[in-house]
Length: 423
Image (tube, rainbow, N blue to C red; front, side, top):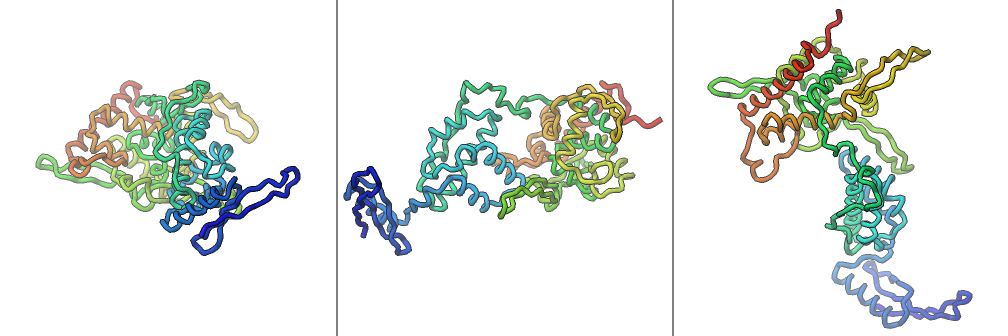
């Protein structure tokens, strides 16, 4: 049974101050204690409450509740097993924004007022701020599940409003500005990069593949055929298959469990979601470009560096950025190649921007939503997902629309070919 023990301080200057320590029986039969109560009755009452919670199966060890957030966050991260890039993004949120402020805060000291006030001081993108708060809430929910806390005071709370002291432009995310590349800009960037690298840009823009799916595409999954009945005949088109097991080239870093150091990791993995496993219908012009490319391409993966190496994300970015943003001329120098000056074509264009171009184009040409979702690798929402299916007529309409967008852009540019044949 819980009881209280009298404690008399012997510290210098305390003048024999008296306090009481609660003693209670823990689930494993050992005695737990909690010091610092002003009276015997409050100590006994607290001990009785602990034993009552133990009998009810809802007791939380006070020592665990005082564990530092940084310690628990690392335990929680070690127990998770999401896709590798998700893990990397979580560590970036923790290392850059969360742990510098909250690492040594006891779990029991978290409250919404303090977290919301801190979030409003961040100068990163608004989406990043919300990700940080959401990640903290998930970690504290894990603490509740692990019996480190009785309740997560962040659960279900919504971060609203930003501090007026933080300029809105300081929080802006480039991918939230709403700009969409034009077909002419896509083709101009592709021409600038040449028929090997530029083809990847065109394919990304007119198929909507994720970057990981694009660089992980194997030639065996390219230019397959779809054949379905349509109007008494057959609808046929070329397709790109996103493989269920090795459909994406994942690139991220892991944490060494012993040293905590980052270890770069890259491997072929399943796509992002089950709906990402799909066959993407390829418009006729792109099917022709891919067929000509594969006829002379000696490598197993369709979109690699000109030497056949798999793209690193940073290498791809450093290749795409100058072509879209422009660059200064680099004169001939020892050990470096001459580079001509490039003016800007579509500043800020990224792989995600090419995917945005595709989905926006689908909306522009009136692609049926159920087909648009399928081709992008998204899950169609609601109960209608069980009843609606893309039809061959929908597929033909989409391909005709994408072909017309390409043809019109070529006319506007005055081009007959994207890449001029060497004279």
